[in-house]
Length: 462
Image (tube, rainbow, N blue to C red):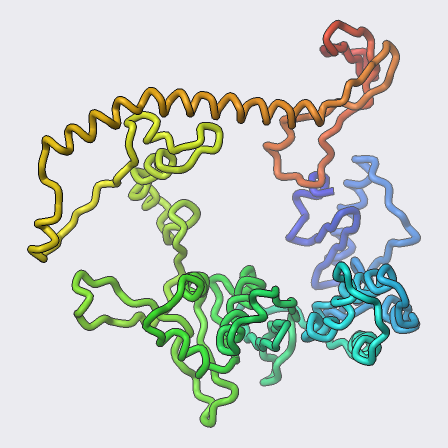
């Protein structure tokens, strides 16, 4: 489908698996596009199911959703079927119901929080008990489905607004935009916390919710302005801590590539505050006063994928790439390549300035001692290389056993019809395109599994 309609996709057509939709602003334009689409189907022998086809409609069901000028809605027929279901009495029934309801979870705020009493029964070694909270969760989900809001189509020229909240065991968030001064939802998302995350403090859970919502809606928020509504006072306390942990620093770096501002919805004045995360500028002297970045530049910390708008600046960091490979641990040899060549650990060249006299006295500047230590390292180099060779043999043997375990002995005879696997198809971007071609007829069988194929036109290939 993607290859057949490649000239129309994303311009006047949307394709999902074997479903396609054509859209345009006017009736006459739709007729022109429809004629073009049918002509392509005729030329490529593509068959359409006319019973499932709808023409010249202003609203319709597309992959389970009702699409109209108002926005995206749930399919009433599917929702009515779900609401008529009795509460499940088995684990399989709970899993089936959550699968049906989870299809429309983007319409339900705090879906994970509501469904938590039911999902808890899916855990191993859990007694199946019809508790009151289980029945209430089941009824609440059915009611939420019937009351599901209409999700609007996003406007890239308008800023996005986010609302997030964290409970003791779940995180909920809503992405939306303003229309006529009213907040309209675009997408709802939620997740259940892990056992470790549930032990976080309240402020860290709120911070976790902020990080989750930006990672979840990254495709919407990257390179776009957004407004975050949350409890800013708790987050401000986290970033004011002097002994920031590694987890907090990772969260700061994740938020650094987004442009947004935070509004305290619980504050008395409800004024816009500064950005959520602010990194300090590096200084040589740790005792100097430091400046705070008040803006969020749109850049990432990945040296390969993004280096600002000028991609030519990648060359500034290419000199560091070989060191990354030479100092990385290699599983087949059991050590880093640098140590295998030079017999010692790699110390990258750095400039060091230290003005403390007592520390300089402890430094070893005796070339004789250093030379003797280096001789010992070189003597151990042969032993190190022998060990790396043995590790590589063990690794190759494991790889061979894994490869051979997946090989199936096939016996082909002359006249059999087979499909041919196209291993070079991976260079194309058509994910849904089949890797198999044919069928072909086996015309001759050679030793060691080699066969000769003949296509329907009689052309021979080996």
